[in-house]
Length: 271
Image (cartoon, rainbow, N blue to C red; front, side, top):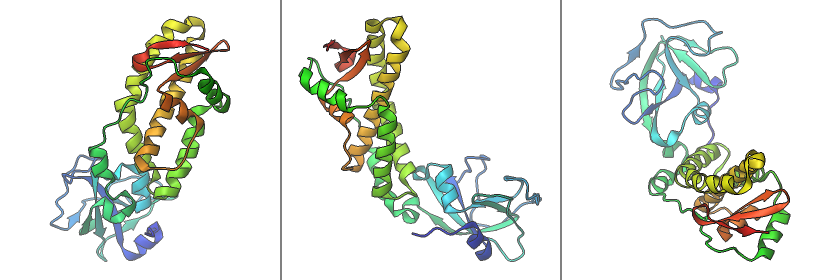
């Protein structure tokens, strides 16, 4: 679907606004009565102000950048001929007017078909903590994987999985999908793994290298989130750190030695 530019919407005297499903604006906590024409007492006509008094409308691109559309409704408004339109200087997609009238209420999945079924799947999503090892996996496997995993694990995975998400669901909605699944994973798995492993790592490595090692653990916990995104979206992308996750361990380098942690942060041994 091609989204209209701000110039096209202004010319057509239309615009969009997102609201919570109870029709309340998340910004102003104002409930919209969509049955009638809406008129403001005063319109801020200062084009140097990005947001001023008036009914603020936007392009669909702007809405995607500004909110999680999965839990919103999107209202398309028309602007009567007598309505004034103010487009702020340098606006990336937002403008305002003094008179609006509802044209249509959209379900986000109608406007963004790539999101079809995502809301339902997320509502039923139950992540599984993949750090399950209770005994030390084969050392050769761990050493082989660590030889392939660079120091910047999380950035590698973020950038490369992000590219895959872009290809799979389209640039316009990749952040919506990635953020939603990522948030679910961090809440259900990431925080849990960090709480379990973090304390154990701290006990094993000592105060001098704790911050350095903590960064390694956080990177691998971050990779777990991206691994979950891969599974959720059924992406073909692979990364060596995913093989560590499949072994059910977190591995940290402490003074040239690898310390391995498993289920509930259990210390499994050193290589």
